[in-house]
Amino acid sequence: MTDLPAHKARPAELADCLRRHWSIEAVHHIRDVTWREDARRARIGALPVVLGCLADIARQALAAAGWANLASGRRAHTDPDKALQLHRIPQIST
Image 1 (cartoon, helix red, strand yellow):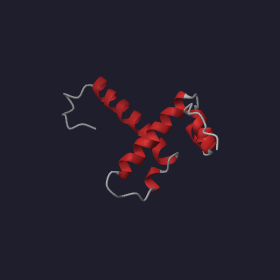
Image 2: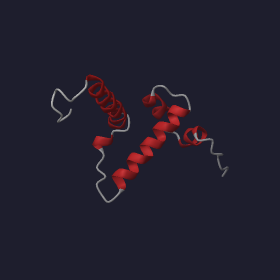
Image 3: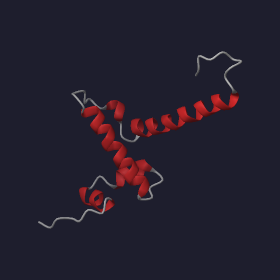
Image 4: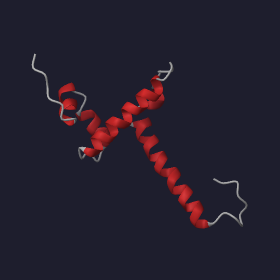
């Protein structure tokens, strides 16, 4: 967790580092489990970064729309029309 000697690492600072680490891990867990990021085979150029950004945008949109369970929200918006409604984008009549 730190390379500081024990007499210089204050408990409050260590606790803060630990909390920050686990808040990042929570986001990574969502990206890995809900969006299956680790299973992606995209390895070309910036594609992995772009897909990660799109997953973060979708995660934030679902959270802003009130979905506490993001996996459930993801499953509920696999239909393109529902995804457009989530972002308040009007549907184009064909």
